[in-house]
Length: 175
Image (cartoon, rainbow, N blue to C red; front, top):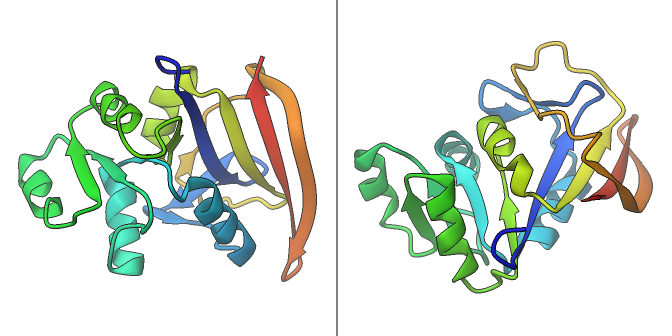
């Protein structure tokens, strides 16, 4: 919770909390991408610079229908990103949260990664929307922080399979 605003993270991770490799997601399960889109649409989405640049290289544009709040300490990049009307650049998580709480849909603020931001934001997060992928990725170089002791109230679970990969949506709340 941040000053009365719910803070959530939408995350897909493997058995060992793997997130990605080389600034790319390891798994791109279409239904999971849609879930991310549905959960974050209409709400401010805070992300780090590397995550934002990964989105730009993949999509060619910021994520639509939400404010993209990008944390970067690089002033040159802040100027470059200002050409996008739905992107706000800030220099810290506290600054990002202040922008988010005043934004449309700010009653639920989403943290969109990467790994460093998840780690910094975890103490403020109220709810995790997880996609738990029943697979390992030994090549992974980024991991989600340990969350299991803090988020013990399961409020949703649904099992799925895609191209032989089993995965579950699990929504957890901090107790």
